[in-house]
Image (cartoon, rainbow over all chains, first blue to last red; front, side, top):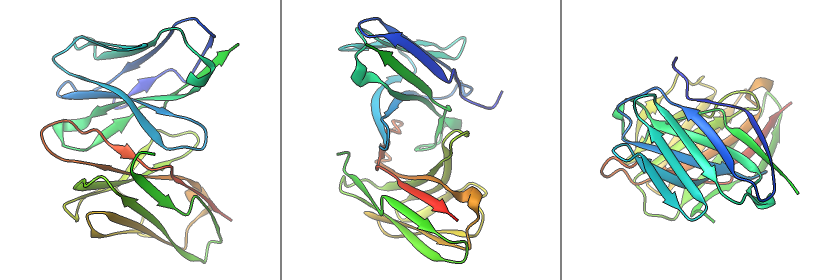
Length: 112
Length: 114
């Protein structure tokens, strides 16, 4: 398909790990991104991964990239209530600089 | 604070009004973007300015008119909007060098068209 796909909702308990999945479409995307949007705010870049990597770790965040399946995931370890937000996956489309194509976002709810 | 500011944060307008959204970036970036975020759709890229030249216009209706007077400022002029134009309008900026397209977003303007 043409779209960047994400599941719309994820609910976890505080302290558990969260895994948010994304499938993208453009195999020439050089960077793939995860953005976080808290209520009433704009998007904040969380992390990104270069397409020649298959994993990137940054504190509680782990990004896994499967280029063959065009699958990207974001794992948040020890999820906290402050992690409740919408998480967007984005790819660079057609290799164009600056043109990001976003998924619809996954709303993460963290229950105490 | 991402270094990108947007005003106003909220705007209510009638279908016959003319208003403008403003975006300012303090990051020294050379590209700026307008996105529309609706409740049930993915983020939609509306316009891209690179070095103050419009390089992308994704089939946006003419009732939306962008303006980029310099590399730090971006406007979106609105006139005769429709209720379905109600959405969150996000501005972003980036530095176009190499292949990393990391964009920094403003907080958005929540627009309601009555």
